[in-house]
Image (cartoon, rainbow, N blue to C red; front, top):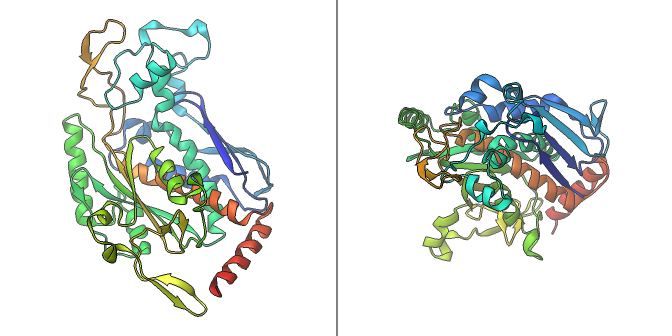
Length: 387
């Protein structure tokens, strides 16, 4: 059974996550996870909290002994440094309740109003604290563990920013390796230097005007085996599972694989990837318009998936809203937030994709220990070359 759960509020004491299903024998350290947490905090357009307050670090409190997983659930804890400034507001004790901190004007585009109506709360903080993208730090921690597992099978997950606002990068001629190298050194995680400068400019302009920006990011899974996922049930299809994982990232409103929506505007003869065979290599394709998934199953090519992220809903110059107590029109609440979080969403996207690929790998190859899982994998891969 491969599963995980996260808990904790944006300004609460901690973020917690528990991951079950990682085989024993995987080398793992807190630094493996801290490296990914640091990447999530970087990016041009991040807000004051990520730049000046938080320095996310993980503490592994179970599932690890002497640097190796032991097969039991792995518990990860991330302390919120900003908790020191919010102890009273986020206190669990009724005696600390203060009506002056109540938030009653929901932000258009946010979970504020829908959540308040669903859960019957009259203080929007009860909703926004958990709806906040701060929760994704816990998923990035889980994704870091999954990346370590995938690395044992020479599978890598990387990302890049393709669009911010109206600015689009040109990356067609770059290899995945070139994209990764250029993206990691870019403040907006964009491998196109010309587009990078323009993206930084529009982010600065949005900040001056009290606005926010969205964009499009791409996640690439390098070297996945054919056969992950299944066509047999709707909820086993790999593309469906990856799409759900990416859509669960706050502000993501659309997902496409490979050539995606562009395929709808062309005839089949122009979009389907022709199949070839080579002895000792097996089946392969020279194009990858399908994005590495056909019929809900990975086909052995790199998996390429894009996600569209809307502009963030916390505006310094707020839109119109309604006071939930008086029912009078007024400006929405102003909440500290990022100007543009697309570069950060890239890293979060890597994490949720890594989680789903790791889940599919565990389903396909099983094994209670890493050596057993590897043996199953190697036998299967050898079989594929001769089918």
